[in-house]
Length: 128
Image 1: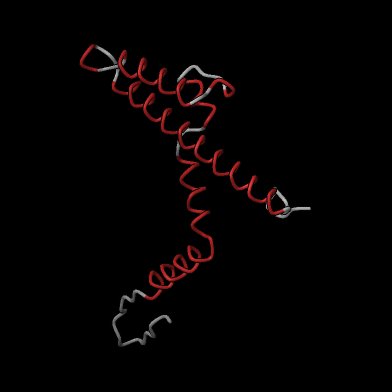
Image 2: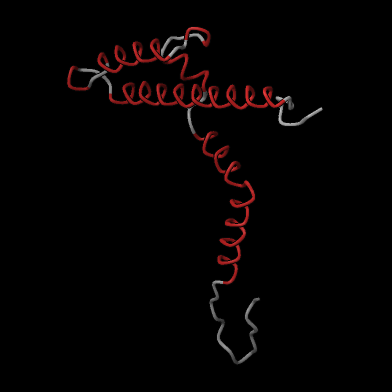
């Protein structure tokens, strides 16, 4: 509730709105809003297509071994101690991180689909 002000009173600062916003954020997180937060973070990170391009890979050949091999090579050749670029080295590192994340997500999704098929349920989250 907002504080009441009269002509003779000084305005007061209350923390009601920030507290309400915090409580709403907690409720959203408990209701699955954490997934929305994950999506927001993903938007700020590197896209999978950019990561593939940086490591010079195509999606079908992007195995764990291929990613590691390209990462090792590009990380070493961009070592600032050897005259390389810290910026490029950082991009290579983020590309590896991004692709590893997407691979883990794909494994989770495949596992989830397999479990649902074993149960005889839908594999697309229940959509008709």
